[in-house]
Length: 363
Image (cartoon, rainbow, N blue to C red):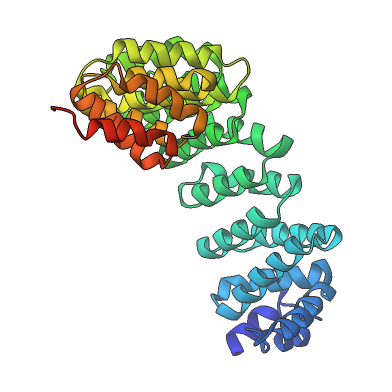
C-alpha cells in the first residue's frame, strides 16, 4: 500500500502531492469488482478522474500492482464497448502521456496494449518511436496493425528503413497484414536479401499485398524452390498470392496462376501445391467446378483424387449429383470407387440406382 500511495502521490516525478491520490486509492480498493453493477460504478469513477487523474493511474503501472492493471484493462474495455467517443479520446491522451513518462518495459508494453484496443491516429503517432526498439517492437507493431488508418500505415513503412533485427521482421510482416500497397516497394527490395528471415518475411508480405505486378517475382521464387516447402517459404508465399488475387476482380490472374501451378506441379512431393491450386481454380470457376473436380478425381495420384472428392462433397446437391452420376459411367477401378463413396455420402435419393448397380460389379 505504501509503495502504491508513494507512486500515486507524485506527478511525473516532481514529488508534488497528487489531488487524485485518495480517489484512486478508493477505486483500487474496489478491484476486482464482484459484479457488473459495481464494476460500472467503478468505471464511472475512473472516467470522472479526467485526463490528469487517468494519467496518474496509468503511470502506476510501473508498480506492477495487479489492481492497477485490472482497473485500466477494465476501463479500456468499458470505453471501447460503450462507444464513448469523448471518454475514449481522453483515455488515449492519458495513456499516451503516461507511455512517454513510464520507464519500465513491462509498463510500456501494458500501455501500448491498451492503446491497441482504444487507440486512434494520436496513439499511432505516439507509439511510432517504439517500432524500432527490439523490446517493444512486437507490442507496437500489433497495436498499429489494430489501429490502422492514415497515420499507422505510412508510419510502419517509414520505420522499416530504420529498423534492424527482430524489429525489421515485425515491420515487414505488418506491411503485409495491413495490406498497405504503398509499402510494396519497400518489402520487394528485401525479397532477394541474403538474410533468410528477412527474405522469408518479405515474400509473405509481398504475397499478402496481392498486387499483380509481383507475379513474376513470386513465381520465380516458388519455381526455384520446386513448389515444395523450403526455408524461404516461397511456395507458401505463391499460394497465398494466388489466394489474394482470387479475392480481386477480375479473377483471371488468379486462374492463370492456378493453371500454371497445376501444369508445373506433377510429382507427389508437390501434392500440397497442386491441391491448393485446384481449390483456387474451383473458387474462381465455380460454375465449372464439377468438370474441374471430375477431371481431378480421375488423376493418377490417389492423394489428389481424394482432395478433389473432398472438395466436391462440400457442395453436393441435386444438380451436382446428376453430374457425378453421369461421370461414374465413364470411370472404373479406384476412380469409380471414390465417386461411389462420394455419391453415397451425399445421401441424395437419385444415387440409389447407381449404387445398387455397383453391388453387382465384377470389381
